[in-house]
Image (cartoon, rainbow, N blue to C red; front, side):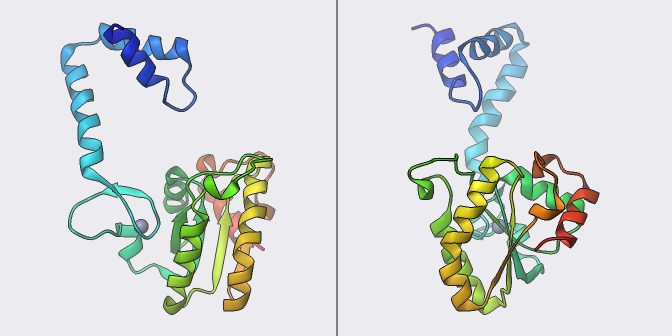
Length: 203
Ligand SMILES: [Zn+2]
């Protein structure tokens, strides 16, 4: 197999990339200045070395000291609320909107409708542990902030079902952003006003 084939196969592992696109990427690289390719290669190598995954919220962050928590988890955010989002980019959108001052947890995906093993698709066990660990910090509300589409709705229902035995025992409320967002809304692409409105109208 040539380098072209090997690299194309590696690109095919990227989300949403098929054979044809993967090969286009390879030919794109062949056309570039060697310096561009060098920088790209060294940035990829450095990525795993310099970026860590937070043990509190599971977001990826630049690792600077020995702490295993990211800046968002150790700042003075309001620990009474925990917002559960699907992915890193959703957390970034909510932070940018400036409409939420509490803590976060990244679920790591959504559950495809009809999935036989939902627990394998998201960090549900880690979320339960996080909730148990947050009781002492005064956690009173969990906000489920998922995209409004069939997969997001399915995930929301599964998460509520999984958390309820624990949260009702601990007296923690579960709210969702659903009512403030229109159908088809992706959290990642929502503007500040939409997010503020959705948060105000959560229930
Ligand atoms: Zn964190």
